Length: 367
Image: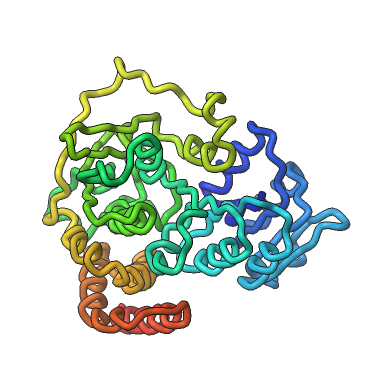
């Protein structure tokens, strides 16, 4: 298989799972963490490697015979010429879309951790070839294995509430980057941790669930322990839940090798008797104002292009300390209102790329 984004949180865990399951790695791709990539090359001995920046080529340590691909297009070239039947896409952000499309166009099975691919282009993707790695969507998938979709009344995602779930409402807009990055349950990269604090991540996951399962009856709630990853309410009014320790290696293993994953203990067992009492809380739009967009996005899911582009632009500005945390939501609301009509005519990848560029420019000027 190929692992794209191998030096990120999901990529590192995927390599650990692959090693436990004795799976061969044909190719790796990474961004700028060349020292970690070099260590991964030494351990996993891939025959293909892709890096993002041509200037990093001289830092790369590859044995003779290893094929090296460079630049965003290089990742797609690696996918095209590989023999691997499975591609795990753990690239963060909009840059993961082109590799997703390339993997599907070359008839690879796609283990997808790149949320943005579905958020901005779900209608262009053959979701039958996609294995979800998000813990919530893996949970929904697992619950649906023995239940047809027509029996479903509501899909429920769960959220931890992020780093600011107990901060006084009046203080939230002024929280520092350092505070926002202190996620209470998970160790994740900066973008997804920030997006958990303002609930953008859950909006992304709602759109992912819409495209993966073809439903619009989707909601979410806060479950603070991150032990319950997904719930389904069926039309008979029974509710089924998927629980496990908060560890991404479980959905990764089921995507990479489901037959072995069912028999191999990869994560700590969930001790039900030691769990704190489970409670489910509504997502309060006073604390998470962007959550008010949920129903609009389900009615008009192509707005995901604007949602993602404005999010990435404001994330960059917040991380550079050009804007306050509270300004992120305000700017995203402005972008969605400004470009709402532009999404009605989206039909091709070229349309998505053009609108993405325009939204980023709009947000950058406001920042």
